[in-house]
Image (tube, rainbow, N blue to C red; front, side, top):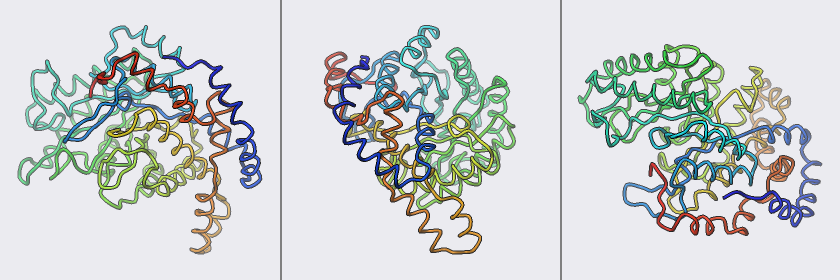
Length: 424
């Protein structure tokens, strides 16, 4: 389904007076508010195709109904999100879950919804129905050369699909590793993985990037072959200028200082992008900012400082994407909440008094440093985020409009209560 613009306009008219009162106050409090609003308008966060359906755990999955049953319906759902918030202008596909039968028709459909294609994602963490060899003991690291070649060929196939759609990046996440001590030789596993990645890297077009994701554990719990940012950095440094580390906020050991990791990767020119989510215990894939909003702000503070130091374009020089799973929420509502949290953290980071912070740091004024950061974090910038949506043509309150229009109910009526998203 498509959301008519007049419905958004009508919603905005109903709540405009209250928004304008909040905005007037925020404009009086935030010095560079107009600049922040424009950066928010420009900032886009890609939506992954797999997050449009109900997720689950190894114990069970509870479908919410009306899930997208095809790549076309996934594009329509991201189009709905983008119509509501004007900040979700890209979709990230997972192959082979989302192989387009007609790439040109899919591109036309995406354009009708104002969308482009972000990174394409390979899948060697599952066995597919018709594949010859199993990935039970790894893919790019596997001791069997034929299995490694199968995984390499799959990644090259993903690149080809991405080229057809206009994507310009490949994300590689490996579940490769070991469950028990002695199961594999760490050095050989590294070397096999590097050689496999080198073949994939050689297949990249000149204008493409390769993002190598890392994860501390799961499904292998003794070792993972790309287990932390240092291992990912080691690979991408060897691969070349088109290879970068991708940071998933849930892929770290407890209490890892993600903001420091981000700062160092950015300084080294090897930060490629993000998978935004939140977690309490591990890779929980919860709504961004739901549990640790201050950490999300601190990460963005390092991003803004580091990107500005390198003269980078905030909107285009890094890859921004959500990677979440929704077991008990409506996926579209959850994604709207995540985008809102990300935009809020970004706006707060943009409002930091950077000159004063730099002076306080040079003077070792620890108290002042803390006050500057927490002042920005405690400033309510939601009116700036809403104003950016309004200027871009989105809804002032996306979730309220989504519920008022009964979008989920309409999707259930259209697709059925038992519809299950492809890939899930």
